[in-house]
Image (cartoon, rainbow, N blue to C red; front, top):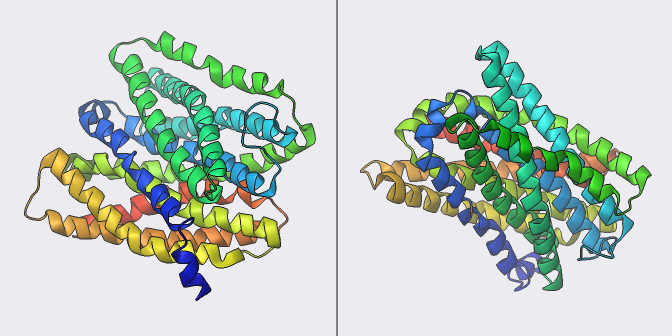
Length: 393
């Protein structure tokens, strides 16, 4: 009875519905991708790096959101930028440093694939590196302030930061990174203005130094950075596989461009599911040592496993309608996309709870691992399941 009562709690259900509806925001980058399909398909490996940029940004945003929401619950961070705690400024320093580390990791794996798998010439390899660093540099300038505003609003309104913070910051982050990915890509590959992209790299180098001057706990900084880098490396390996699957998926997508339209929304939605389940699990562990504290993870999972498939089918319908128009066989593909949502939601929920439990048992901070690993795994899982389901119908 308590679980059913909590499921109808007006302070629980509306924020949850709002959080998973943020996938609607991701239809904007999806639309931008669909109208840029010709440009994307004309540049070798540009599609390969997109899911990596998307996933790694989600990884860093997950570390930031997870630590922020848990610390707000515990009172270790205030919902403000200025006159905040040492832990807050340490977290900002870690996050800004991670953007630089993540750009380096994505570049490294992309260069390996470029040279040894796709045999891309060296001049184009340098363009890929420039594209990655510039896109990430601009993205962090936009994403960090927005994340802080969303966390503050959710906290002051009495909503659960575990539910609101990551989904909203993730969707806005996907929008930012897609816009910058396309803008920088056009500057480099179409207009041959790579020197502008080189200028855009400056913030990703300077910002960590500036943030450190606000004051931080060096011991905490190195601990958080060390655990986060391990998480980033694991995520880097996962998103490389995702990029390879997406590259293999390109031929199918070219004949069904509506997939470009809904793809970011699908990835973000499943990542949001994992973040809600995972973040509520880490908060429960921090408060009472009980991963199912107040049954929140189970309550959220019970609701989402029903709602997400319906939401996915709506995205597929909208994508068909706006991109290619309705076709006689479209309904079968709606079912396939909905089935993708059901399977992905169930698996990523169980996976997120497992990561929280295992990292906590090993005396690690679960917030450094749960959302980063689940969000990149959600992208891989959703991409793979979508690919398998759609080519099978």
